[in-house]
Image (cartoon, rainbow, N blue to C red):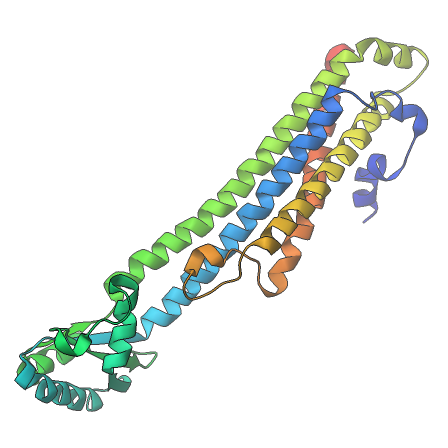
Length: 301
């Protein structure tokens, strides 16, 4: 703990004399604050995107993994008989929790987003759908297909597997993309701070020379730059985080109709994640300024 506090001592202790080494205002100050605010704003959205994608992958995996559908396409005179035969086969299939045929109203509700309201399902050759709920272990799909082929020739089993895997994989990759974006934003912040610190050190080369003549150590001079730039980045990141937090709050909440696009808000304890952004940005600025200051001071020696 003592070494940890010693490492951050330049940031925690104010020294007005050392702070005068760094210009308190100017273009680099405004640029540093603005860039850190923008990066923090983007980080909040990257966090929201990543967490929303993770929730989506989990929900899709859980919902689709334990459900399947049977579609029965048969002449009108045989539809009822084949539906009854398929339901009987399902009740005798190990691994099937329940099975029920969807009503005409339910099938109409499924088709409304595509064909609009008022679709006369009873007058159209719409296949009969049977909804299946599975156990965690599932059932023997090949065996069920063979039995359905014998008892209800018009029945087609859809396990949802071919839909589940691509969707879950896409959501998982989107989650990974969000974290990669956060890493890139962090690296960009570090690079920006390094360039700004290098420019400020080079611009104050004569002041640094005078300080050395009067006995100031390189550690004393470096602490001035570390403190100023870390606090600038912390201030900018705090502003950007607050703005990003407000923007996320203004996003619509999750809904079945909107799906992923309306589910970008944080949920539960995930609302605490944005609070990590300003300290993380300050830590990156601290490390980047320390490295830049020691390198440039070494070159000016």
